[in-house]
Amino acid sequence: MTEITGGAESYEEVKKTAADILTRVKCRPVVGIVCGSGLGELADMVQDAETISYEDIPGFPVSTVAGHAGKLVFGKLGGKPVVLMKGRVHFYEGISIHKTALPIRVMKLLGVKILFVTNAAGGLNQSYEIGDLMILKDHINLPGFAGMTPLRGQNDERFGPRFPATSKAYAKRLRDHAKSTAKTLGFEGFNIHEGVYCMLSGPSYETVAECRFLNMVGSDAVGMSTCPEVIVAVHCGMEVFGLSLITNKAVMEYDTEQVANHKEVLEAGLKRSKDVQKLVAAMLETLEI
Ligand code: HPA
Image 1: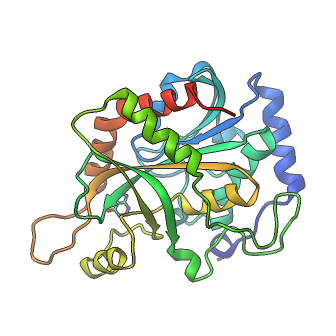
Image 2: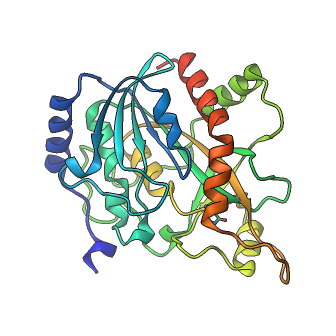
């Protein structure tokens, strides 16, 4: 039960973890990147890569899900020093909501100022097709409605304020930068939308009634991650950019053959992975830090 309700690691513990990592790598990252399901190939583009397995970082959460490796990759991407999470952990794995977001606090104390979060998501918006991308404009942290938020518990001001605003969680300058970069790259064969991501805790995919409900309340895509990391990033003053790959269409009708499955999610990820890599690298190349 403690794993569910849990508590956050203390500032001192996070600092110790970050200090330990800094003795093991030469890179001093300013951008952190979280790779979602099937999007871990981004790590292959990192130059002068230095790698640490999550298992070798005391207290770091380790993923148990197929398609989610567990490595921190340090190096240069688009000419910028980055740390990339190849694989992330999820609340549904039984890991506390605090622990799912711990890597972001570690990144903060490594010197990261800007966070790029990617994920795989089901399309609720009827105009979204499989393989489309969605720039996150906002999110609905549904588990947070029931108290599952990484900021629950005593606040340490050294990370951030007790009551942080999240109404500007997804930085406009980064969203605009993504749109103009995508235009320059001239992608064809898929659309790039801007929309609202809704997190559910999973791991079961949504019922038809749930999908209809989520769409009705303003969600364009649904997934099982991202919100805890973004909330913690905003709390500690990072700028955030979020990108969803639409890997499947959420099932909105009864009596269809269509069902969501993890294989489909991973396959869609691999197919669009190169374009996501191109977009992220090109954004970093021209990003002002
Ligand atoms: N629902 C929840 N999470 C997901 C989905 C989905 O349809 N697709 C990828 N992650």
